[in-house]
Length: 158
Image (cartoon, rainbow, N blue to C red; front, top):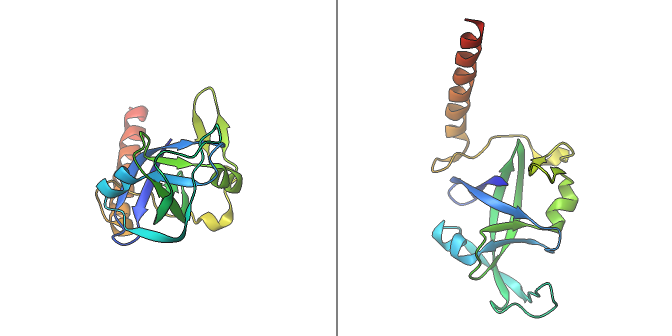
């Protein structure tokens, strides 16, 4: 699913394809993706051992860093910490803690994920716009969307 991630330090939003995985016991981000996107990493007080599905230790070693981000998806907004792990093919995984907290409706046939049971503290605010700064630019994007909807409605009535 495509989600918006906002860097806390710059308030710059990007859009990324995230995986949902109920077998993952946290929220994780690839270290290469974190570096490429300029996320500010914070060192964990205690590194975390990572185990693979078969119980073996992950060859990439310990999780030693995390990033603070805002996650945006379908009006859902959440400030959270994501652990950073090295050299992965994926960019972001939202694991079981995120799935249990938000309990999204998932249509496994279509891949559609709905946030119909989202908690009130998830603050329904703005969606990130790739390459632009936070809320000040969001109003501009919403105005463009609204204008597009009005054009479509006029064309339907012709």
